[in-house]
Image (cartoon, rainbow, N blue to C red; front, side):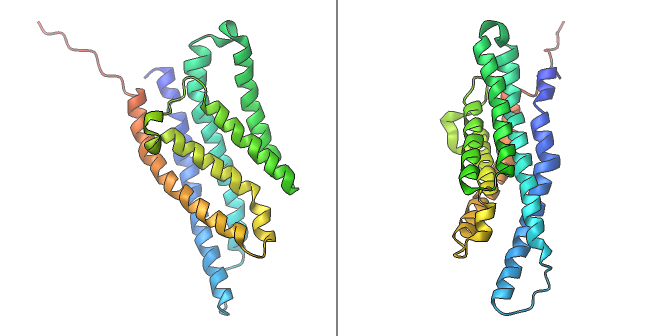
Length: 224
């Protein structure tokens, strides 16, 4: 296995040990939170502790952060190996090299500022900037997109999930302030979609590892 092939394993490895376990925990707390809310609404005394809501939000933020990190790693691997290193971009196109480096820094900084922002306007701005950074990086040379089959593409599924996680972080405060529950319903619908896309990610990611070329066939045997 070459170093480039080994680097392909970093993205799925981190996804398996961080994103998917967190996804299970968040889904469990989301279900418990909803069940407790429905029981209280019906006038019953719920046995589910009120801490499930706080845990759902806390682990949800960690999940969103993990998704953004593994997405940037997944995009960074082909950009670095197939674009920057292969084309010696710092020599052949120094402007593009600096642009790519700054785009990674810009995207990470925007996502951090999204967590720190309190005003609705700034949360919207930093969420938009974070999403733009992910999309722009995804459009770079070397990224395996499978655009001819976008409806079954690991790349497009991943970008959509990443954008949904960024959006979820941006509307957390609105969910608790909105008495009409409009934002809560939007949050539920979009994250059910994200859950389905996560399942699709497991299938398409395994397929793409083979298609990109993780496995190298052994040399042909000489016959005398």
